[in-house]
Length: 57
Image (cartoon, rainbow, N blue to C red; front, side, top):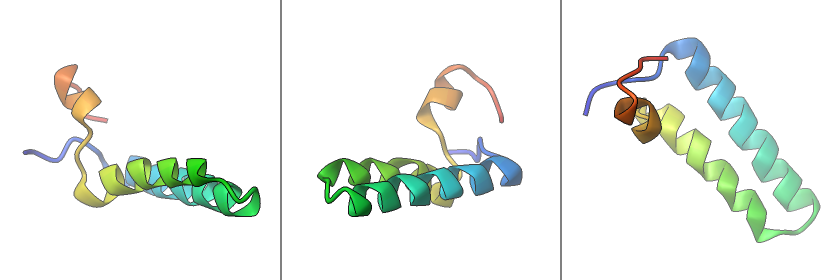
């Protein structure tokens, strides 16, 4: 598994993930857990969709 996400994109994914989590908490919805997906991709530096397309973003 190679790193397919560069640092600026990781930062954006973490911010978006946190915002989604906070919106889920605010509205008391489990849909906010979807925010864990971009945070996980940013932490591991791997995006399966990007690797399928052979792109490094």
